[in-house]
Length: 184
Image (cartoon, rainbow, N blue to C red; front, side, top):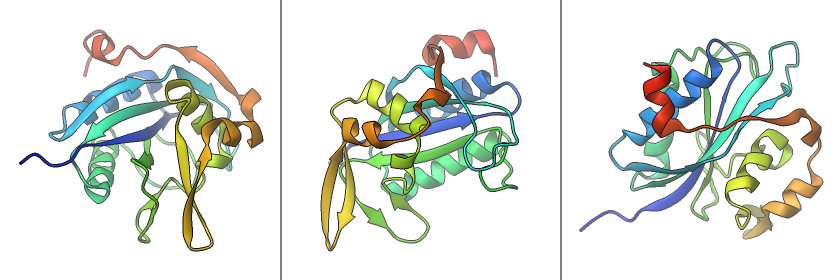
């Protein structure tokens, strides 16, 4: 019997090196992972840095995937892809070759210390909400209210977030075609 497949959304960002190439390589590595299939990608957005602002602009995307991996396995794989493409963790919110965050995993709300779903700061970040709303305008973001899980519609989250002016459409990400053109 096949494992159940879950739709999930990943946020990817890069502000060091060949940013677009790194995003394309990351999406392809994720798609080549057994148990993961990339379904859709947002436009590439160039975004102003948040938190630590003394750094170059980021390129950000959100991808929609379908996976038979559990959330912990997906986290492990995204961290492997980051490392494979040269990610070194130094300054929190600092420059990076690649950052991959699990934004949503089905309708699950999870907090086990190492993994929080949805991503705990996604509703505070226009660079996440703008591309997510582009590819999933119907999505509901789970959150804990008291002891119950409730849901916030993406449009409501987007209406409340600051910094939308710092999120600019940059290019399309034709990851299936671009990989050959950009190279490994």
